[in-house]
Image (tube, rainbow, N blue to C red; front, top):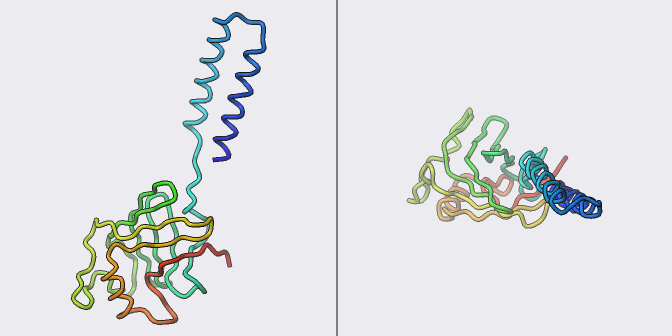
Length: 173
């Protein structure tokens, strides 16, 4: 956002400079088109910072549970040093939607494909969760398969380890 504001400021300064010269209106119009084209080409090359993508992990409160990282196209769930799941993610402003997928690198069965308490596991391709950035370093999570999440937590989580927390905090430690 700062880069875009700098471009707008540069654009305004250039327009002011051009309008203050003694050139004819036609010359100033041509200069203005050149400036607009230059600004357009600059803005195409700008990369907008995604607030979800950080250089470190997002943790649940007190670091008790799964750790997550966001990349351009995936959210990575680190269940343990021996188990990593990767899910597709799509970003919209301060929200990210995670889609269920079975891409994993695990040395054990994390049971993410299992049914619990008669509730079937999400199907591949289903929107599974919405992450909302509520502060620069806090994400709230809404799980679309809340019954399955609750049944999974009841079966697989304990007070020391939470698999699907409703809040993540950005922490560097």
